[in-house]
Length: 128
Image (cartoon, rainbow, N blue to C red; front, side, top):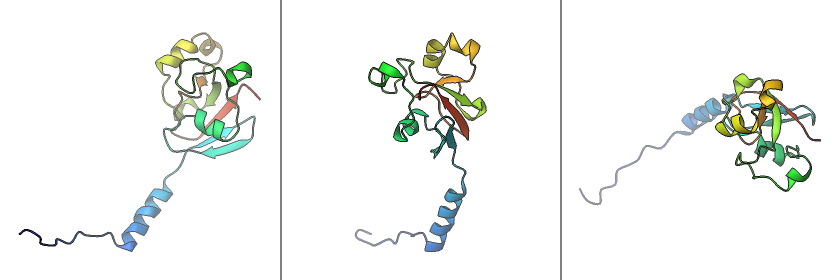
C-alpha cells in the first residue's frame, strides 16, 4: 500500500559494539622508519611515500625534493629499502624499469610511491 511505513531494522548498540570490537581487533600494519626511529601505523595496502612525508621522513634527496613526479612512479627518485618483502606487493612495472640496475645489488630496494604495505615492514631511507 502506498504511504505505509515499513520499519527498517536498526543495529542494536550491543551489535555495534561487537562490530567495533572486531574491527578494532584487526592488526594494522606498522611502518618502521629505521634511520629516523619512527613508527607509523597505516591502513593495509597504503604506500610508504605518504606516511613518510606526513611524518617528516625524507624520501627525496637533494634537488629531487622539488623536482619529482609527486608519487606517480614516473621519476624513480623516491628509493627506499623495504623488508621483509613478503609484507609488500610485487614490483610494479615502473619499479622494474627505474630500479633495473639497483635490484641486482639491493634486492629489497623499492620506490616509496609504488610499494604497498600489507604487514609490518622496516624502511631504510637513503636521505637524511
